[in-house]
Image 1 (cartoon, rainbow, N blue to C red):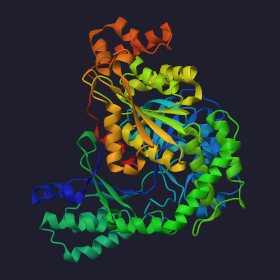
Image 2: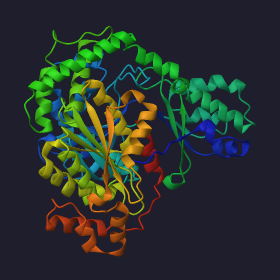
Image 3: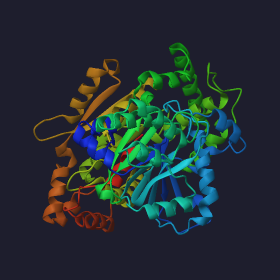
Length: 556
C-alpha cells in the first residue's frame, strides 16, 4: 500500500502567484471525518443469502470475523455509550447482514474502503453521533487470508457514478459537502457556502481580509475551514479540498485540519482519560495477560472462526473474574481481554510457547531457500515459527503479483507441510514487526526466547547476526532473550531471490521450477511458473489522483 499524503493548504499555496490561481479555481470542500479505516471485500464466492459467505471485514489487515461478537447480542446500548475497541465492529457486521440481500449486483473480488466513526482513545474527535460508515473508494481486488490476516491489493475505479451506485447498494454515507464554488470574492464565497455555520465564519473573517491580496484570502480559507463544526456534532477534523476541473486527472487535492490535529497535548489528553497511573496500568495488564493465559489454556482447537466464537462467548460473559481498572468500564476491560487473546491465538501460535522462531523475508518470489529457513526452524524444536512476509514489491515482482500465489499455492502448501506450527503473517515492514513481536513475547515470561533466523551469503554476511545486533543496540535488556540463528545459503540450495527473478526474465522455466519448495507438486510448480512468467515488466507505476486520495485517507 502506497504512503501518499494530501498536502496541507498552507504548505501547497506558498506565494501570491499560486494563491491567485487557487482562489479563481472551482473548489469543492468535503468534511474530513475522523474514524477508523475498514476494508470490506466482496469475496470470490457466488452470491449466498448468508452474508458471512460473501464478505470479509478487516481493520489494519486484521480480519474481523462475524463470530467475534458472541455475548454482545443484547448490549448495543452499552457498546454505543461506553465501548472503546473491537466490540463496536459488531455494528459493521449488523449493517452488512441487513443490506446483504440487495448486494447481489456487486461484482466478486471487489474491495471497498470505508470510514467508520467509532470511539477510540487514539481518535481526537468526540462526535455526538457515532458508528456511521462512509464509502471512500472501491475497485477490483486480489486478496489472500492467513490466520486472520488479510493481504489485498486493489485498483481503484475513478467513477463518481459507480461510487454513488455502490454507496446506495451498501447504504453507506457520503462525506458532507460544505462548500462548492470559488474564493475570488465575498459574493462568491457566500454563494459557495453550503454549510450555514461556514457562511457565518467566513462573514466574520471578511473584515480582516484584503481581497486584493490572494494570500490574505488563502489565510481566511485556512482559518475558517479549520474551525468547521462537524455534521456529526462537535468540532470537525477538517476538510478535504478538491480543486480544479471535473477531470480527475487535473484535480488537485488539499486539506485543512483543525488546530488540535497537530497537537500532541490534545491527542494525549484524550488517551489519558482512559489510563491509570503507570503502576495501575502495569498491574492491570499483568492481570489481563494472566486471565488470557487461563482462557486460552481451556480453549479447544479449531479453525479461527470457531475458536473466536468460543473465545468471545466466554470473554463477554465474564464479570466477577475480570481485572479492575481505575477508569475503564466492564465492556472496555472485556475488549482488552478479547483483543489480547485474539492476537495471541492467531498471531503467535502456541500462547505458552517458550521457544519462538521469527523469520522476516521479502519472498519475491518465495522459493526453496525460504522454505529451508522454515524447515530449519521447525527442526530446531521451536514451539512456533512466525514468518513475516513483506507486502512491499519490486519492479519485477510486485506485492499484487504475489497475492494469488500465496493464496492458491504457498499458504495451503505450508499448512499441509507444517500444520499450525508455522504462521504466515504479511507486513509492510517485516523487521519492525519481528522486533515488536519479539518484545511482546519475551515480556510474557522469563523463559521465552525468540530466535531470529536469517541467511549467510557467499561473502560471509550474517544477516541474522546483524539484525539482532541492531535490535540489542537499542534494547540491551533483550540480550539472551532474542538470539540470531544463521543458516548458510549453501545449506539452502544456494538459491536467491535475485537468481529466481533472473530465471523469470530469461524464461528459464526448468531452473525456476527446480528451485521451488519440494512440497509443491508438479502441477502446482507449473502453476506458479505460469503465473509468475505472465507478469508484465512494463506495468505502469503511475497512480491516478483518486487512487492517491484513497490510499492517503485509509492510512491509519
